[in-house]
Image (cartoon, rainbow, N blue to C red; front, side, top):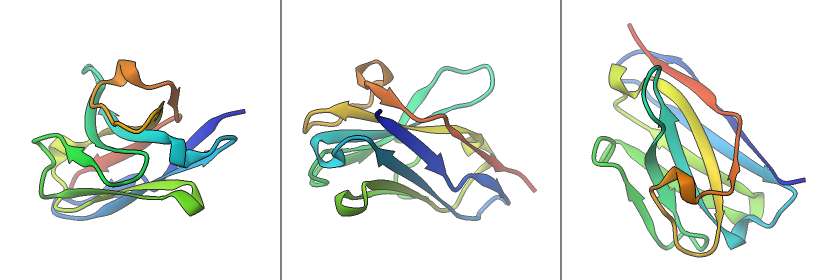
Length: 124
C-alpha cells in the first residue's frame, strides 16, 4: 500500500522556523516527483514547492521564495520542507503528494498520492 505521512507541523511565532517531513512507504520514492501543498480555511489547496524525482529540479511559489527550502533524501524515502521567517499568512494544513514521473508540477490535480496533512499555525 502506497502511503505518505507528513510530520513536523505545530505552532510557531512569526519569524520562526519549522521543518516538515514527508515519509513514503510502499513504493520507491526516487521514481516520483514530490510536491508540498497547503490549504488554509476556506481557501483552495495551492502549491508551495515541488521537486523532481532526482532532486535536480525544484521550484517554489512566489509567496515562499527565499524563505522555504525543499529537499529530498531518496535513500531515506523522505522529502523535507524547511520553512524560515514564517508569517501568519503561512498558517494552513500542509500536504505532501507524489506524482509518478521525473518532472514536478505545481498543480494538485496532477498528483496521484496524498498524505493526511499536518497543521502549521503561525501566531504570537
